[in-house]
Image (cartoon, rainbow, N blue to C red):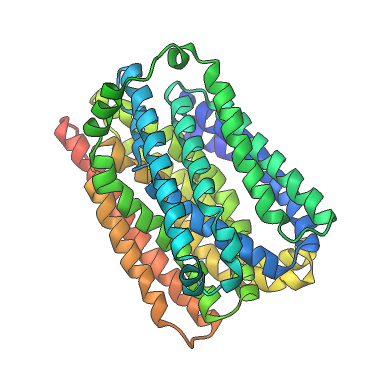
Length: 432
């Protein structure tokens, strides 16, 4: 991380931007370090099949959480007026609550058919916990963007550490007591802690606590940012669902253990990259909005960011390809060597995502939500091709999956650069 920071300084990326990125990184790195330190313990306390159920749960919750709030939480950053931003957050929470109630009703009515569809009839009980988990995620995301609005990056970092530490502790304790559902119960505890700590952090911000909820202002916020649910929510859901779709396909085509190895591999090699790219994206969102409001050029900043991320991604990809199999067996136990073998394939996909994903905030920041939505639909359709690979070996499945990922994310990068160049040209800067 020190090397990355030194490189950003040499490339001329502004110190404030780097400072905010590394403030977020500090908390996220600590949180992920806790996860990585616990992983060798948890892989010896829980079976691959128990991990498989856990991954099914999280991969159901994450896409639904994107859809639940209509993406209104993203709009909290945009208004110049704090009162409008506050009511935009209230609108996000209100919609999420309605969505979660409706989701619970649907799950109650169609529990078994849904379980059969994802290939896990034994998942029936935990399906009822999906709606409250979705609400907790969207609630915490709403709080997160409010803290981001006021550049309270330290508070965000503390929140992430609390979630991981609390949830991980519960998983460890329940694992020692041979509670097979410990992974899911610990994850749920972490989500609850995130909301509690977030509310505590917000309560110290007088700019928010001094505001009263107004129905008319909530309605105004819903109307002002209606493009988010119309052109961002469904495409973003499809994008997230497409990212998690391989989980359900692998579970259906192969077995729960293979699904567990596949998802564990994605988690271990993907999370370190997501830590950095997520922090970059979160800081860039506010930065891009400022550039747009001040009519400042953006392309040079984007190119410098791509350069730094690409150098890091190439190095990481090489290490994963040559070391992952032995590393997984040594750290997590011999039975997880298969996950390390899968990592050799998946590393290429995550390297490209690492470079491109942080830049996707260009679309909402520059009011090009439809562009981002178009790509997300394209990605969903492309990943859906995997449904036709039944009967293929797992190795061939992984190769085709990675090739699709790389091609579609390169298309994403092209669209991002087109938007940025268009902005620079509109303010009279030669984008070429």
